[in-house]
Every structure is written in structure tokens, then in C-alpha cells.
Image 1 (tube, rainbow, N blue to C red):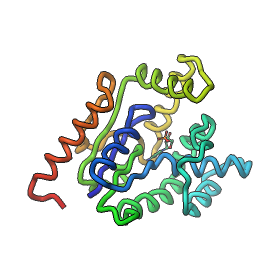
Image 2 (image 1 turned 90 degrees about the vertical axis):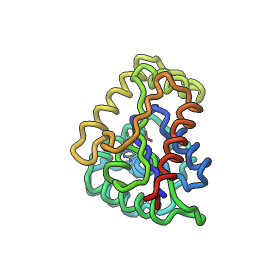
Image 3 (image 1 turned 30 degrees about the vertical axis):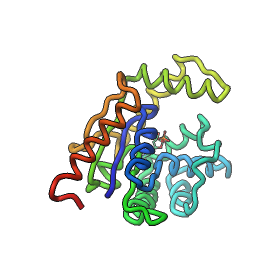
Image 4 (image 1 turned 45 degrees about the vertical axis):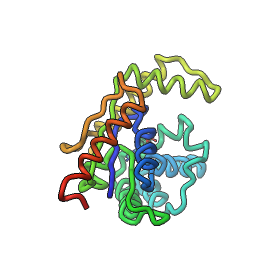
Length: 215
Ligand code: DC
């Protein structure tokens, strides 16, 4: 059982994907943290990163520490979004993600992956797909609150502008751009709290599981 959760930054896809993984006892992979790990390593090495260099780092990725605070740095996110436009980086990370999806760790019976291209490219045959979105204003407010909670408040307008820039890079890149898969369920969290979104997603999965061709 593979569940794909895609969407732009700060739409709530991570919280939703984690909640679904817990509810259905599935392994969870935040695929953004793979791109962030590659970015953090390139920054650490002080490289003037290019396609080849970034691809080398991406293809040597083994263990990742998704809790490493450096992954949440603003600069790491920006570099992650830039190296995510390199086809060779995407190819290397696609293999990592597929391996996780088809061989979930710790004996789990399936997996939930969240990212930008899970339903379209990484797992186009996923059993259930969600595309989580929210207005730019709401996403900016959420991100600004998150940043403030981490002790470095930032002006809302700046947060909004950065999100807009990241959205554009993620949606306009040539390889595997951010877009909903045609068979994805759209979940707009602009006026929906996470509990309600989770309940809605759970019902859609249960409905899918009750149909005869469930894996
Ligand atoms: O979800 P995030 O903000 O942690 O992701 C950081 C960047 O990584 C994002 O701007 C684009 C890239 N990314 C991607 O291209 N494809 C994915 N499946 C996940 C993330």
C-alpha cells in the first residue's frame, strides 16, 4: 500500500502524511528532507554546486537524519529547491524514494511519501494520492508562525515573497514539476484545520480499501 501526498510548501502535507502513516501503521518518508540533506552537504562542503556535483552527493545518500536542525534552515531550503531542478539529482533521489516505497523499513506493510512529484513521477501507481494545497496568504501566515516559534521572527511580507519564489521554482522546473496527478484527491486546507483534513483523507483511503481491486 503506497500513499502519495504532494503539495507546495507550508500547505500542511507533512502533518497530514505523518498522521496517515500513524493511523494506518505505515512507514513515512518526508522526501523534501532528501533534497535538503543533499543541499546541506553541498553547503557544508562549500561547493559551488552544479548538476554533476549535486548528483554525486545525491547518489551516495544512505542514512539521513531528518531531525538534523540544519535541514530546516532557510538557506538549506532555498538550495534544496535549486538543486531539485537538476535532472540527475532527481533521478538519484527517485531511486532512493522508490526503494523506500516498495521496501518499507521495520516490516511496515506500506508507506506514505510526501513531496512534490510522488503521485506524478516517483510512484505514479500509488494506491491513493492526495494533493494538499492552501492559499499563499494562509501558507505564509503558517510559515511565519513556525519561524517565530523557532525564535527568529520574520516579516510576513518577506515570508510570503520567499514562498512565492519557491512555488514558482518548484512549479516551473522542466523535470517533474509540482502539479497534482490527474487522479489525486485535492485537499484545500485554507479553511480546514488539520484534524478535519486528516479525517477526510482517512475516509477517502477507507473508501478505496473497500473496493475490490485493493492490493
Ligand atoms: O518539502 P520541502 O520544503 O522540505 O522541500 C524542499 C525542496 O525540495 C522543495 O522546494 C523542492 C524539493 N522537493 C522536490 O523537488 N521534490 C520532492 N518530492 C520533495 C522536495
